[in-house]
Image (tube, rainbow, N blue to C red; front, side):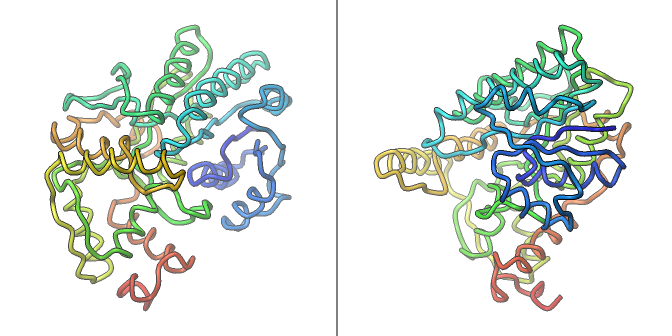
Length: 350
């Protein structure tokens, strides 16, 4: 099947390209920056001859529409993802509008299937209750989650109207081969843990952590299933920050010291980061939305049961354990030069 993939220069999108080719699909990638696309392809052992490269921009509706001419299906992974207040207006404006444009174009061109990649963030702030395919969206924690909630509402309306749209909800994505020069937020968090060696955290906060290769398998698989309006939860494993730190210690044999701190202090740090960033235009690694993701989670002790059974039944999700995913991610971070030998501990000897 000939498929179009957006977001192919990103962490998940690039893995989706690799997985789609592995499954025998013919792939067209819609990218804004062709040079970045070349780099992403090379990192996965691919080249420009492996795929059809088409220049398109999330802000240019005509280029998105034209990019779907002659394909049979669409995998939409692209979005502006940032937890910095400097990108707030762009996310609120572009993420929903580009989703509507692409899904409308998919209907116009009579595509067999569209897969829209959402996020677990559309259910934030979480209440501690169970989450399944019928759980309504929440109100969001800041610009990014609110922009994805608006995008999600659009995708669900297309489902309601009978368009063939499947939706995937990934958790926090980890694993090897991240083409982002500054790393995706989740991979950046891993790097900072080992670079700083100590820090403050909400130890009771639960994180949903999942391997990028497992999510890519669900996203690509959802293009070619009988279900035309499915919703796949692919959050992965729910673990506390203490459990994550313990696994990183085990994998690297490093003595990393992180200390639990009162939640109000983390919220105060987020407020300070927000004000400082807006005042100076210097991006700090924390702001209101990123801190709320930890603190609201800790206050309700994480979500309840996440129903990931459909992803498991249809695609064998999840096949890669958290420990294996973290080991592969940390090993790749060292090999790619994001971590020094000292920071990588015993992984540096592999």
